[in-house]
Image (cartoon, rainbow, N blue to C red; front, side, top):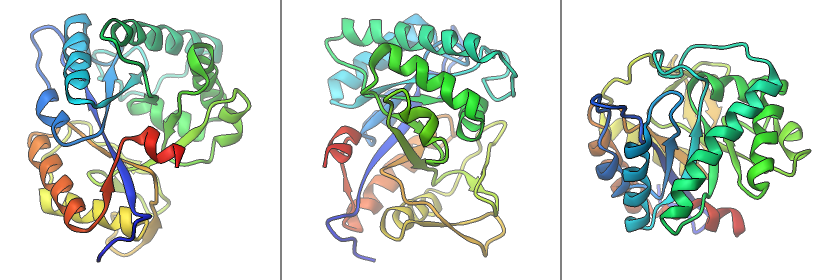
Length: 260
């Protein structure tokens, strides 16, 4: 399907999730095919040298930089649910955003968005008190930073802090029939052509087929997420970018899209 001029998306990916001698993903390889990165801030992955390398790599390539904040769960890679007091969670999020902002400022750039990771992402997308806490932390740093979540369901809880909620779609994750993400405990290799076809459908038709193979769900969003921790993440990103280009979908940085 040929896309119209209105078919424009940002492609984001998670980066800086290595820690010490443990290496996860090819951050710089992914950056060659995306327009935004979400930099892990130390709570689920990432350490200071890894964060600096990711930030510098993004600046060199003109890629947007967002804070990928998480629960304090390094051992579980941020994918375990944690019931944390909302005030404590706000402080944890503020701490992580501020840490990344220091590296970004040092590199002569600026943050462009905030995106929770793993279980915090899921819980902030459907739990009002968590959406409120995350948005409050964002507002304390810079209320103009958009907050990426699964849908706009929590918009009233972010907008009361002056924070814009931006939904995203996931070509390389399955959806349940009721629209929830199926989070892989360990990211598996996906067929690049399958991911690319799902991305094109999301960008042009605004839909995705659920895991049952039949249910069609709405999935229109200004940004698509690809996971760099997949064993073939770079191949997936390269193929997806090429297929979007061939379909006439304009891939642009998120700030440009939101400003239009």
